[in-house]
Length: 272
Image (tube, rainbow, N blue to C red; front, top):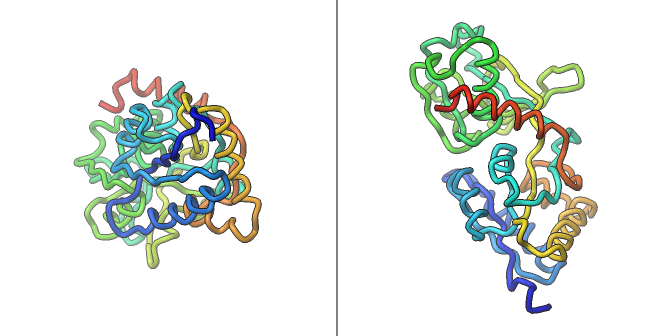
């Protein structure tokens, strides 16, 4: 270990405030990776996507699990290691969902309803639905009676199921024909929801490192992630954390398009 080699690597991510054992699952993966690269990997939890970005900028996190909007807003602060593939797909959808027993059947019927979102920096859980609603001629700033943020996809869906909101934004997976096959609600037993609309495609989450981190450490970290994905006895550790099947090197397609849509919507004040 040279003098420039860190004594530990801090892995940053957002962990839901309650009802999740994600932190423990991260620790299991980090423990195996630590043994492989010979440097302790320590978990650092952030309460929100914006807080995660602050941790990376301030050097409090070296490697981070970044949703697309967080990655874009960090810009040159980070360098992508790879993109997380879920079910072999290099993209996913944003979905607006409602209770299956409800009467909301169209985008127009959302006027005056209560929206439940994930986080102001969540692509599928806020940003993309808001951009697409504007493209459809609906101003999201006036469309809803109230808008609330719940911190995680699970929590937003629970709020919908419990009647705390009328429509929720979350992520979905679609087949080659565009038919929705699953979504965040699939992980909640008895979640009786209906997909009102989908908007996509959104590029996958990114595992990124601070650009100031040494190239050797970046290579070691990527190698450890790839080894865990390739090892049949360790692949479950990756799946338990990311719900993903593989990590492809670099940035997946679609980020330029998402950046353009974000810039246009921001200039129009859609997020004000």
